[in-house]
Length: 148
Length: 253
Image 1 (tube, each protein chain N blue to C red):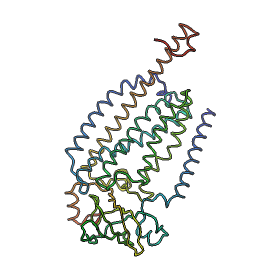
Image 2: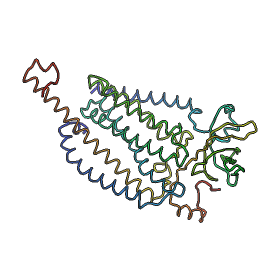
Image 3: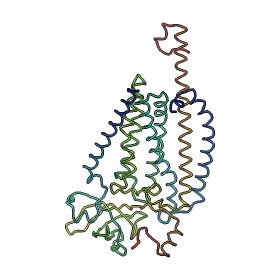
């Protein structure tokens, strides 16, 4: 019985130490584990200006503009605190629309405009049939993306 | 209590009764789940028909995590209490869990291309699930890397426990860091944010996947126990027939 108890103690202490070490490592690398910065991070934190980085946020309603060449788009990203203008040339994903969360990859220009070379759409955790979404919008119960 | 089921002979008797029932319910759940998922459930308001990938992707992801948790538990029981069945169960579950993880990654990639616009990104959720796949492959490889199968099982059990720290990372990666992958929809505080018409096929498929895991696990444990008994019998036979020949290895024909 004592040997079993000793093995149990060793395993439990080992798991505890391992869990603690992992938590410390993850906390230390916190900034490197985020997939994207928010527009507020860009404005307040010392983010690398000369490297490629990702910015995530919601496309501001009514901000999407197509330029004359038909493939370049400009829009404004927001995290509901700070906004960031973005320019992108290329094909937008299916889920890209105003009011939708997206992640743009590219460089921050000197004029404060983010020049994206890749735009990914971010899907939220809400799943529902189209009729339900329409009914919610009509009744003013809408809490999904695009809600103001 | 645990000792009652740790007896291989008793386990084999119980498994022989349980397995056909599980297999029958599994077939029913998968048939109903696939029918509802493909024909009797609505498209999503944003994703359209692509949402149907979720009915395979999410149950596979759940089972990938569940199988690993089961392996880690069995590994701990085997290391601490030396139950004869624990390492057999852990070894039998590893390839099934690896298959679920591979299905999860493949279907997620197929969903990601049309929805996100990319097959793969290195965000915290996707990366930690890829690490899970490598852990599974490591468990399988390590178990067979020793001539002495007891040492292989022991080493794989330690790796299984070490790898268990990855499970909470996978589950909470979408909450701790901002990721491209969406946060949890079903298991979350405040109830599911998924419409009941879509939750039904998801849960049916999840039940089918769970029972599939149980059935395949039982088959694998039973065959492993039978193979061990066969080895022991052959060894005993060789010893009885010609004591000196037994040292030359299994050359009976």
